[in-house]
Length: 507
Image 1 (cartoon, rainbow, N blue to C red):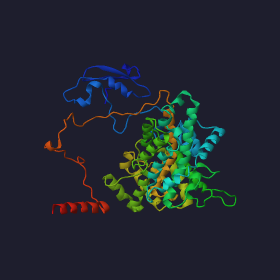
Image 2 (image 1 turned 180 degrees about the horizontal axis):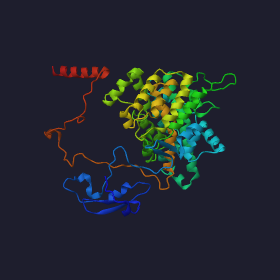
Image 3 (image 1 turned 60 degrees about the horizontal axis):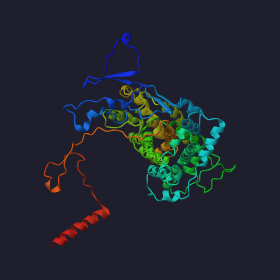
Image 4 (image 1 turned 30 degrees about the vertical axis):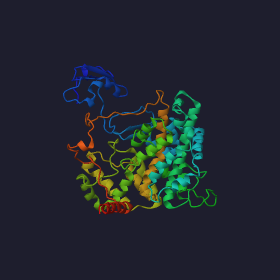
């Protein structure tokens, strides 16, 4: 890739020397935090060459192409650090292993959002505000009942976050002024208070909306968030409680099982943030145009809905079900090697050795299974786990089990339907989303709308041709013209009637 000079000839200089072979010009790019500013390349210009098109804009400076943001840093952050090569995940500097063992989800939430572990009084205040903002307007019942009986819970939850924004005009920069939140960076106390109020609402109502999406599928009435419970206890209570009251008596406690509540709390810690993943980037991309935070979170929810992001643990369960039993594992792995099957729950876009969360979650899984009973899929999962880790094909490709491999099994053992798995991902990830959104709003340099470039490879200038004069060759290829759609039911009958009418009109 680059010419190596003897160490004796080198003098450390935090810069990058570039020679443009088109012009012979030399440029020096400053290196800061092991990164170079992409904007610098706009100043590297050349006259158009024989193979350049006008659309390449050669004379306007170089562009940096990075499909899928594989090596592009879009923001400076203080929140989460990942070292994928060494399997490290830290929230605000604290190793995820320590937080999962010793902290709680709401304490970790405080850490992610505000940057430090809270004192007892700070945590008490934060917890009180989050739980206080759990209840939702009674009109929301009509909103959820407007969905079809078989609507996917992620469709409902995504819509519900956007719906929340319609209640809180004071949180909408389009109504209150575009500096509604950004002026908090200058120390405006009202802006800070307004920002934190929306954060309390989003975290507090995340479990309420998720529980409503769950219960509408079960045909049950909705439950008001209870008092006197932790965040995850309240969530489980709202999911499962059958009585119309949230009263807790000493004789009959309605609190969820402590092992399940604790397991969910740890899972929420592990899923609270993961740096610049697809959904967090979506929240910031949306947030950069300064909408209300509820709309930004709804966009993140839609991003997480995709099977390449939030649906990974569901894919693990479906894979294990398709394998059937431990005896079928060898044949399955051979099919994976031939690219006939997909191995879900192994490997990671970021982690190149192991996912540090997978070791924590493995212990949690054992504790849950001790309470719920052994899942029949566990034997298949263990056989797959052991066989893959002993196979040079997967070891050489650094395909180790990730957090999704075990989380799906835990959720299944706890009785959650598979299409609810992404919802259980969204609820804790709301914390990471609002932490990044808040950090963006508090940026001293202000908020710039995210507007990436493209490499245009389409047609150059073409003159319009009237339809009757279009005698040339039409575009041929997949997706170059509208598909022929097969119709049924009412549409089919109507088209048949129209066709029959045209025949009669000719008679």
